[in-house]
Length: 291
Image (cartoon, rainbow, N blue to C red):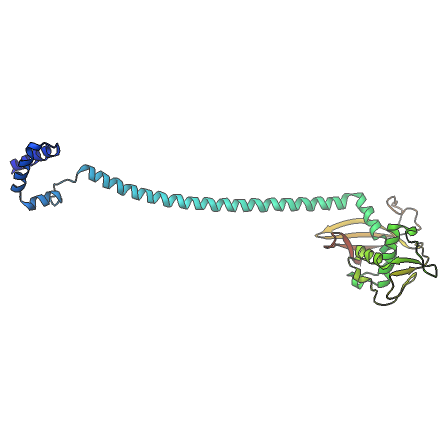
């Protein structure tokens, strides 16, 4: 038996070297070996038989490569998704933080400019003066305010803005004519809407009149003597609203205006509430309250 194995090994070596002289031996030896032995040998039924080294390594490498690639692939994919989510979340957080800082900065800057700037006090003093001089009864909206106070305030605002000499047209009785359009524009500036000036009927006031269908108010001689002068003591801001603490001073007081001395005693104090008009981005008086 041992001799037969040796011959087979020798034969196999000679066959793979391509020696043509041993081809006949190949046939003789092959025919002398039982078919079942060949099958056992080449199909590895023999426990002692070994798979060729090159085949084992190729199969093992293929298996290892497949497993390794699969595990790495899953690991990289999961890690990438986590990193993307973290990046998106961090970006959103940073953007929201920046927006919040910008909004806070503008709000503080705006409040500071309104509250600390002395010219702002003078500006709002002049703005509310046509209303303060008529000592309005407290109201919670322009629609609740008295019509006579509204029209009188609008007429005086135009006079303060343009001067008395600006209106030169007069009627047959010598009364000054002021266009309705200008009175309504003043109503928008002071009270946020022109609807508070109702021209669907005749109007008669202390120093003015209006006849339905005409284009002018007829204004008689007027004076502001004996009326009040505003002095704003404090301005506070809340959202889109300004609250003005207003002292009412007598016009006869020589210490009125910005140079008012501490000796001037206000006749009374009121709160004027101003709201931002979305249409023209300007403040208007929407309420007057007792202190």
